[in-house]
Length: 98
Image (cartoon, rainbow, N blue to C red; front, top):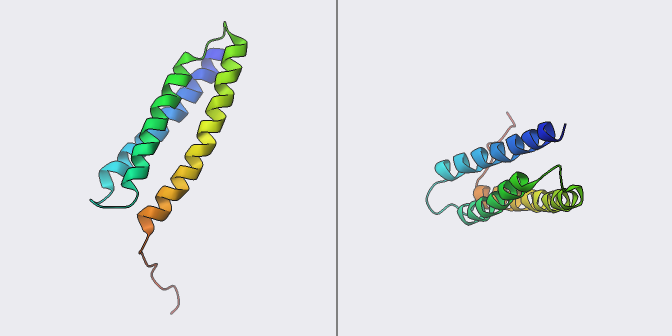
């Protein structure tokens, strides 16, 4: 059960990394989200390392690591909202009225 949960968490972290890498590839030069994406990249490396450090033989340590991951993920959500705002700053949505 532990291995399945760790594998699922690893998949979640790796998907986030893939999304961020794609966003870095498509961000035009000078886009305001670029610095924030670099922040996300560093945080994701920590999340990856923390996920790999989880072990069934040290439940207390793993519980502390999971608590840290929860905090990191919450911070990532906030950073991603900042990145979205920076990426779309100055963009105008097309009118939906006819």
